Amino acid sequence: MKCFMTPSVPFAERRIIIMYTENMNEVKNEINKINNYMQNQLWMDFEFCMLNAGKIVLSGTLDRSYNKYVIDIEFEQPYCISSLLYWSVDTSIPLLELANEDEIIEMNKKYRVEQGNYIFKINVEDFEQTPIYIAARNIKCVINDKESIE
Image 1 (cartoon, rainbow, N blue to C red):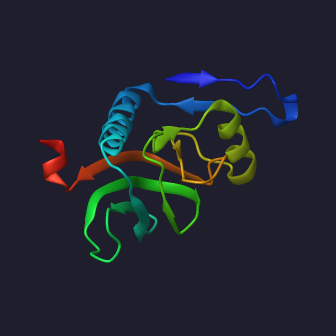
Image 2 (cartoon, rainbow, N blue to C red):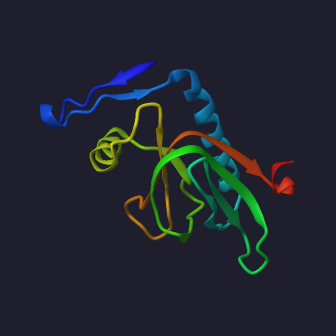
C-alpha cells in the first residue's frame, strides 16, 4: 500500500490518498488495453449503458444508428461520477487515465472519495480540461469488436 501526502496545500485541506498497489497493476493493464484499442480507431462515440450502485458500463460505438457497441468499459463498485451523458473522443490521445495528484485532491474536496477507490478520468473531444471523472474500486474492459484485436 502506498500513501501520498499533499504538502502543497494548507494543512487543514491535506488529504491522504491511499492506493492499493496489489490491484494497481491490473488497473493499469486494463487502462493500457483500452487505450491501445482506441489508438486503432478513427473515432468513437460513448454513452452510459448501465449506471447503478454496483456497476457503471460505458459503451463505445462506431455508428450510433446501428447501436452496436464495440467496447464496454465496466467500472466496478462506483463511488461517484462527474460526467456528460453523451460524447465523442479524440482517438489520437489516451481515452482513459488515472487522475493526477491535483485532480485527486480536487475530487476529494468535492466528493470525499473513500479510500480504496481509483479516480479515473476520461478524455473527451473538444474539451481542454477533462469533464468526466469516475471513482470506482476496479475497472474491466470487454472488446466486442473481435476483428480489431486479432
